Length: 134
Image (cartoon, rainbow, N blue to C red):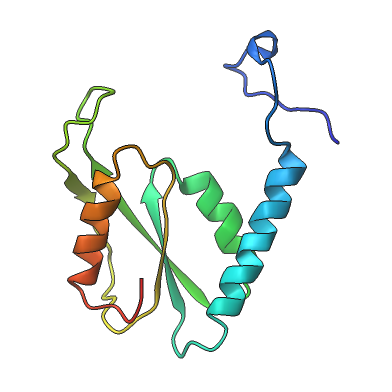
């Protein structure tokens, strides 16, 4: 195991337990990328991989770089929190896709599910555009 690298804003004395090491997370990301690559190995057009900004970006980048299939990266952003830390329940689309996804295979990379309202709204938005799969 390598030494733990803490962000500058974090006090290492405040950390009781490290649940997952960097190596364990890296191994899981590689495993997921291999599984996704296998599932999409025979698609006709590049896989559209959508990142929900901003929280998913670091994981998205790690995962997308390891995919062994042709892919196109896209980004969406939603807001349900306004300026606060509690979800209002009203989801707003802040940044939309730049490309047409109709008839295409789409993979969504999301970060944390709280109420699930944002993901439900996102999937409704995506399926209305008639992709081959989401």
